[in-house]
Image (cartoon, rainbow, N blue to C red; front, side):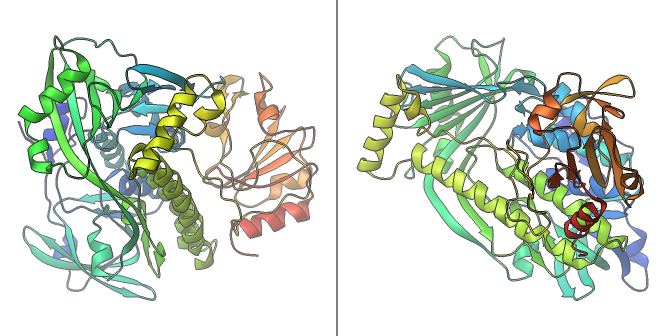
Length: 549
């Protein structure tokens, strides 16, 4: 079944129907222009990262052209675990609730060794957060809802079947050569965002490369649709050396539509083509689910993976984000989540530069901040992969000893690593931070993402993150001084007047006292805080956070 859309498509179909949607190629007026037409921002790649970036920029009033060499959404589950922080970003972009309504929410994971449970963990042990720790949602649904949102915004132009085949960077932009079903044309971009995936044609066209470590192991992904509700709860289950798949590991996740995602470790010597054949997949699945399980195989893939990144993400007016800039193993759900955080970091900075509010020095900070986050993700991903796939007998003995100890001893559970699950990076050492001059406790240091909390806003129940401004926010506990209302591009929120901290969670999480103030960036990272702020200190912090000091 294939649906080619000339009108905006309906994205509420089954998984099969959504994956079958094809977006129509349309000839652009740019193709008939006598000279290359200039655009402020061109995003290459209509995956979750490119679409999130385009929507963010469009909501800020920027015009964006999105080029994609295909005309369809992704197939199969691919990225399925979307973290709380990603959902908070998507809330701001108008698609968070859409994702949560369709997705399977979960907070609990369980780890097994052989045929026995070792322990379980809760990624959201305390209440007072709007979003769950994770939802499971097939990537094609996530992309569909992002496309749906993009089509609602007049500032975004989606061009399908537009393949970038050449790029000529300049100091003030880049000239792109684009191949279409009706021939080639060129456009001139002030800024180019390369969100074109791990094989990034743009990266190759510019003669750049990603460096890192390739892991010598293979994994089989199998998406199976159950005939009825399975006996497994909505949790992340991970097995080390189970009897149904000895000497290897297995990961199980529930997805929407009664589909279950199973990852089987195969070993480096496995033949990918043989392992993808249904007659070889079905016995593995039946060994896990039981001989009487009724299921259908929906999709399968065999993959290897690497932990790598580009040396630099910013190359003049060409900026790399998501898998084009960095790649990690799938353990920990760090790929798509970190890519969406790349997009959020880049969007507000690019908007400020295009508006003339800040110079290119601000956009240049995207590189160090997101390279730092990529290094953190790669370190966590590498450690998880080394634990899951030991490459020597000594490593395996150490791992199995840690697993045995973890049955009874909580300290050993900190050693067990089935994938440290994605959390947003705290941007320690960012040039946009103002170091603390006062003593605080807790995690909300400069560089951290502001934690959400329930509040009353305008007499209505609300959530803190939804009340923040599109630019900077000054959050003050108690009455703010008069000068606070005069700060440019800053929304003032007074706790006790504008917001009511109904459960006391906001003050507790921010270690706040009367007079305490937090300065929050457009991407909801804390950039400065004070016990008693002064106008000079806040203005200086704003200059630092916008690289205009």
